[in-house]
Structure formats: C-alpha cells, structure tokens
Length: 528
Image (tube, rainbow, N blue to C red; front, side):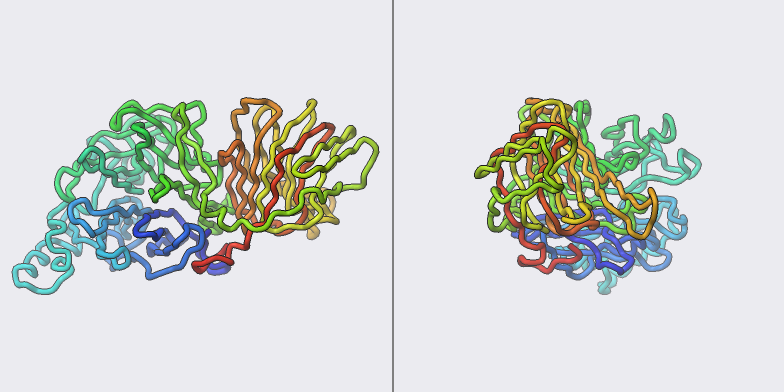
C-alpha cells in the first residue's frame, strides 16, 4: 500500500506501474498541484520505497509548464534497453484548458529526459531550429544526449486530430480532452491510446478512447476512435490488453467512480459489454495494468474522501486479473499479500456480542459453527480483539432472514464495521456504523455505507467468502473473486464475527489468521 505522508497536504493520484528485473516501478501523480511525477520501487508490490522523482513541469513558456497528468511507461520498441514515458501536459498559456501528450526517455528508469518538441504555431521555446544548429556545431545539448531518438521536427507534443476529435475550445465543453496515454504493440504495429472526445453527439456523451498509430519511430498518425461507448463524458486512463486471444479495453468513469471494461475479438472494432462490466467497485479509480511473472495485475488509487479525490488517496495492493471460461474478467487477491498471513486462531473460542436471550443458539465445533437467532439481531464473535486478519469460511443460510459479518467492533459500544451479505440476491454492503460523541440527539448516530457490490450466486443462500484487513485496507472476496476493495480509517481494532437476524446459519470451513502489520516486511512503507 502506498500514500503520501499524513498532514503533507499531498495525495497520490493516477498511477502507472512497470515490472522489470524483479522490481515494481510505480510512477504516480502528486495532487493537488500536479507539478511532478513521483517514482517509487518495491520488491513485493505491497511495501514501497520512494526514489528520485521522474519528471517535473517545464520551465515557464514550455508546453507543460502548468501541470503534469497521467503517464505510461513502456520499453522503447526501437532501441532495446531504453524506456519511453508518454505523459500528459498542460500549459499556462492555455490556462490549462488544452491537454497534450509529450514524451520522455530513460536508459535506467530513474533518470528521465524530455524529448525536444515544437509547437504547431512555432512560438514554443523548444523550437527545433536552435537544437539542429547546436547539433551541427557539435555542442552538448539535450538533443545530443538523445541522439537518433526523435527528430526534433516530429509531432510532439501530440494534440487531437480535428478530423476525428474535439480539438478547439469552441467545441463541446470548451476545454480539450487529450490525456492519459497508453502505448501498446500488437502484431508488429505500435498504437497509442488516449482519453479524448468525438466531435458529434450529446456533449456529456462524447467520451471515447482515441487511437494513434506509430507509423515510424516516434511518429504518430491519428485514427478514428478505438471505442466510443456513447454513454460517458470521458473514458479516462484507457488500457488495452489481450488474454487468451481476446482483447479487453479497461477505463475509468467519473460518473460513478468505477473501473469498467469492454471486450472484442478484433482489436480495432466490435467492442461489446457484458451484463456486468464493472471491474472495480466505486471509489477505485484510474486503473492501470502491468504484467509480471504471474500474469496481469490491475492497480489503481482509492479515494477515501468521496467529495474531494485530491485530498486523501492511497494505492491499495493490486489484484490479479483473470479471465473466466465465459470470457468475463475477474480479480483475485494478490498472492504477495498472503505472505503477511500469520498464525491461525482457535475458531472454537466464540461468544455472543450482546447478552444471550432465549432463541439464540451457537454450537462451535472445530472450523464449524451452527448459529441461530429466532428473534432479531445477534452476533457471534471470536473472543480475541483483532486488528489485521484474514477470515475465510463458507456460509449457508436457512430461512429468509438476514446475515453478514462484523469486524473491528468495540466490545462496549458495538461501533465498528458491519458487512451485510444478501445470500439470495447476491448483494454485499459494507457500512461503518457507530457513535459520534461530539454530536447529540439523532445526529449522534453514524451510519455510512462505504462500498457495495453484486455477485452472481449459483447456489442461492450459500457463499464462500474471504475477508481481509491490512492496516486501513479492507478486501472481501466471494467465491475467490474480489467483490469489495477499499480503505477506511474509522475503526482499527475489535471483535470479528458473524451476525444473523431472525435466521439460522451454518458457518463451515472456518479459518481465521492474523495478518502482520503492513510495516513488518521488507521495503519502507509510506502511509499504510
């Protein structure tokens, strides 16, 4: 997990991760200023160590002198051993209303150099003529250090092609979307994707994934939109991957702050949606993929402040990205996270949360509970208060009552997290439920729905679940697939257990393990 230091007035923004030679390299925005792209490394994808910042805004007058937005790092296909970073830049001259895409290069992933650029109107400070003249004289310049990399008369920074996309301030929303680059090579051809907007249609339905082809080394030509769902204002942070011969396009939508995806058997056309195309639930944003020895991973940042996504963000552990036999994508718990799993706790040590009344029953055998409550709510909890843990079990509900899990629940006030599980409809809802002592009357009650998810239940009334807490991070898997993924700091320690409301429930295959604290393993951890 990774976040900026508490109290620093900085927050992690959009992320990009590259795996190389046993190291995960994280490149991320720093909000709210957007004045540099930070760099951190990790050996396990969970704990991170900051290293030198990768890129800064340009000098006054440069095309990127106001802000830097989302970037993507990938190997240079034209020069082995070199890396390219496509990134989004904004300039003061346009008051930040026009987004463009630039390029930086590196030989080691740590030291980055922006390539020479020119502007369409020739007024940019990096006009290629002085650079070419310096080359003729043999003077040492940035252009010399990037010899044979990019012709300074090339197309950088890239702007949207007016034949295909909104490209003028008099169109659409009166600011130009052209950001979040993602480079991919497929069948020997190089492609650059970006978040952009088509020229026609309802103004808030023009969001698309722009497409450019790399026709020569570092030269790009615009193509029609790769995908235009005709639903969203923007399709942010696009990713394109292929799994088992099928293409998947992943993007983030501001409308509901979720990560969604589309699928196709052809890269350039035929994009379709499944009945459920939500890959990550609300609050997870700007998803990015990378590939390591285990396959594809999905990363993102999570916004703990729903009203301001520039204030309190963290990057949770990644999820392993998989494809099921029907073609749908799903996510699994990152295997490196399970390396923090500790000793097992005796699950026979159980007690009722509130005073026992007639009609409440609990039979606790090794790895199996049979519990019931004939009249209203009752919870059965493990006797030990826990902070970080992993609970796995199978639930089988009898009757038409309610059930769920609770955790980090205070023994006296019963404040904590309550996870409602509708095993018939396939609905999970996590709430922080407690008391605000600084308020009075009905305002004293805190009842906050943190995240919800749906799943297809092939056996109504039953579910195999896994609940994991790790610092502020909370993850719920159902049937081995991640359903909830979020961070919250309201409660840190308390009882863990199962609740029922006018129901009978069999809890079997129970396994409860402690989890080490996030800072007890290798790399230096920032802001768990």
